[in-house]
Length: 260
Length: 230
Image (cartoon, rainbow over all chains, first blue to last red; front, side):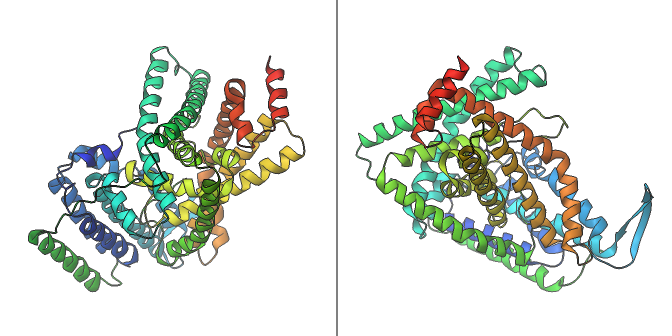
């Protein structure tokens, strides 16, 4: 149970900007990063989006770096595997372990660096979205698309109840911790089981109550929301266009270039 | 096991979306049918989804020292069936990527396939077959969820292997990814299976009517399990 990024998004100064603009910026960054063949494009995107998140979005830098490091474990392990085994060609260096020869080839190293850069670029775009746009704002965007209503209804109610249950879970966990419920492996397993069961039963009762309370308020299968009009301002357009041009220029000039 | 944003290169993330979307559409169709019959199911599904999200953000005590989180989808599949679980898992995975920076948007298709479709379908099939064969309920839940986790991890390794074949051989890279991630995923799956089975034990003890209402257990089986506990 870590910090939920939505908490920061709610108080972000970028929250009241046009949603579609933000989504366009993010989608552009993600797609450009994932389809580029040189590591420079995702790196440029990562720098731009991190700057936008930290400077315009006023996200604490330490927190930002910590969240950006979340995928580090998975990505590092996979990148090392790719570096050692991907592709053919001459090995840059190699060594012997237990009779096997392990070597890093140039193709493998390039691929590993590219994947690292892409993940960095992609994660910074994703973090821009999640640290500046609370989910409430995105629901109106989802409603404008052709996604089925029942799907959106369930996601909206789920959004609300995630916070309810997280609070319950945190309370129970504190109570268990102060009673030494996590002192060793056996007890902590027992504690997690009790916590999970309690959450399950609690959520079931909540669900039944929720139905009754919504029904008594004339719920007809559709929650309507106020979709605020937020015009895009000129400086935002200029900045976005400048960013797009920069990324596309880097994309064009670094085709096929790699570090090694 | 989540694949993070930007990790899958171009043809592959579209491929996994193309595979996942029809299944999700089918799941939404099934869900809409359920909702039109019993309208009270909407809030129940929503809280169930929230429960999966919170369960998957709990940290399991782990043996190897790495952080390990349950997926919760095996349990959802046993409770709600695989079609509905796949829809719920789309929302849960979307929220995980937005709220916890876990997963990603382009890799959502691949993650939905491994965690929301492959795992739950296997868990559900195993559970149904074994309960027909009269296996002990808790053992059945344990096996179904643990194997669902393994299927998820094998599918994720396969997804990585297809995207990054070693010297043209998908099998070689699959072996490598599967081998390395086995160190964290194999014990994690056992832990999650045990966790789910024990949760089910408490639920049978305290609120077995829920399980009967969801057709997880017949009422006679539930009574038998409760009697065995006393």
